[in-house]
Amino acid sequence: MGSITCSAECSIANSRARQKAGASASNRRYLYGISPEQFEALIQAQGGGCGVCGTSEWSGKGRAPHVDHDHATGAVRGVLCHHCNLMLGNAKDDPALLRAAADYLERPMPLP
Image 1 (cartoon, helix red, strand yellow):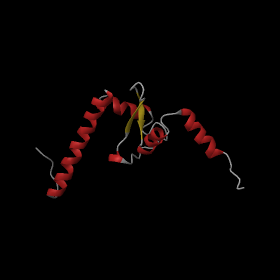
Image 2 (tube, one colour):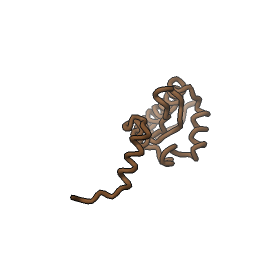
Image 3 (cartoon, rainbow, N blue to C red):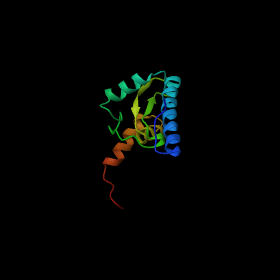
Image 4 (cartoon, one colour):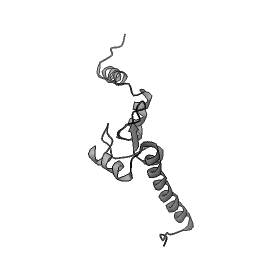
């Protein structure tokens, strides 16, 4: 039996949300080889939030956590929020570049 909603619009939105949640789990299994239980375990192992910044406020595309993986090996590293996932991707997963960016942010820059 389906869920009871207040309107046809809410029923459609509810159905789409359920389909999207199922699609995400299927995509994670297909792309990364992890089950929904493994995905949840990764998040819990990180303290319930993003592996970089720690937030549990999932924002960005789909408002869902993102599986982070090594592009060279395909190995899953953890789960990230949208912003941290973009940050690593924009830095091309280069630790030296990310360290240089942190150094830049921490040094004072006097005006000429």
